[in-house]
Amino acid sequence: MPLRAFIILIIYFVLVGFPLLLTQTDDTIALELTPEVLARFLIVTVPMVLIAFGTGLWSWLGLRFRVDGDDLVVETGLLRKNKRRIPLSRIQAIDLVRPLVTRAFALAEVRVELAGGEQSEIVLRYLGRRSAHQLRAELLALAAGLPGHTPEAPERHLWRVRFGPLLASLLIRLPVLGTVLLFLASVVFLLMYAEGGMLAVTIPVLLGLIRAVVAPLVMYANFTVAMSPDGIRLRYGLLETRMQTLPPGRVQAVSIVEPVIWRSLGWARVEVTVAGYAGERQALSSTLLPVAPRQVAMHLVSQVFPGTHVDAVSLVPASSKAVSVDQADGAGTDDVVFVTRHGWPCRRTDVIAHARAQSVRLTANPLQRLFGLATVHVDAPPGPVQVTATDRELGEARAIVESTARRALAARRGGGGDPTRWAR
Image: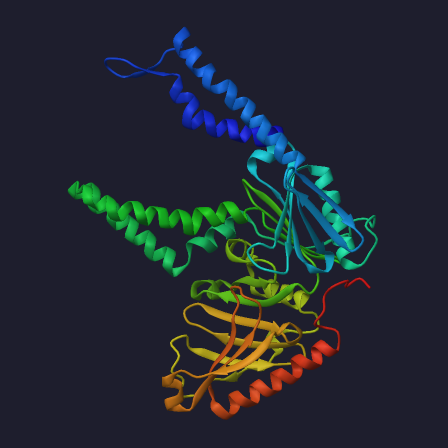
């Protein structure tokens, strides 16, 4: 409650309170704390303080949550109550988030991601740090089918991304290098010819560099990956720290991304599609590993989909009549996963477990139909990873669809399609 009130008062002081303390003089605007100015400030500020604390108290009293059997029950509102009963089996991920302001007060947020869409997130704000950790551990245990008092599972450290490689990986990408050259050229032109119109180029380019380099650097600083019985644990963040836990079986599809310059250094990035994340949350939580040696990335994928090794899957090249600009390299399968590889200069290896495939379909655009080609789609929930085998001969594409559909059905019948209550 005090934190919410404090945030409201900070916004008020910046937008309204401080300007009330300023006085217009003949020459300029000055800060003069005269009795009249102070009285004006207090007349407006005192009611705002009461409103801020009243709002904080109202929101605090209006949120209640508890675990009732196999459900998480969340109640909101005072005058008009709203109750949500969420089966714990729908939990897709649990994040422990500590924004910069809450870290100063030793508080945290527990964000529960559910199978659904944009409105599927449950945010339990402003808990004590220890209480937030205990709640997270209890929810993970119950979602796994264990008693709520089960101690937090131990973890095995897998990889930590150091600051130097993270910064280098963000800089040595072709789009970023091109943008840097454009920025330097615009600055040189601006200084040499004093042409103010170049600011229309320089400022947007600078903002683009901040978004492409500085923002990910701040977000993924101190990135660590650990494996535990209750799932994959990710910790990262410089200003806003986040501890993300993906329970077993929640990752739907994986992509190993290798830009052309990274390949010469043996680096790769791992992106994932997780059911439950949607919209902006999907974009912010799609990175399983921002940069690491390729063998580390492949090892992590083998932990996500146990029983497979992506590099051991034999990939059949696309047709020699391929018309796709994305330059499909090949596609292949084993008993656990379906794998496709495509792209230049940024190579992507997309992987989906047969048990996670929601549908398999065949499409052909007019140009492909002209050459007797087709594209096979192995569909996962919406996300950054889209598994497609492009430019296959039509007969081969139909055989891939039938084979993949049979494997997916067999995997689901074998129990691989239901990750709920995994500890049982």
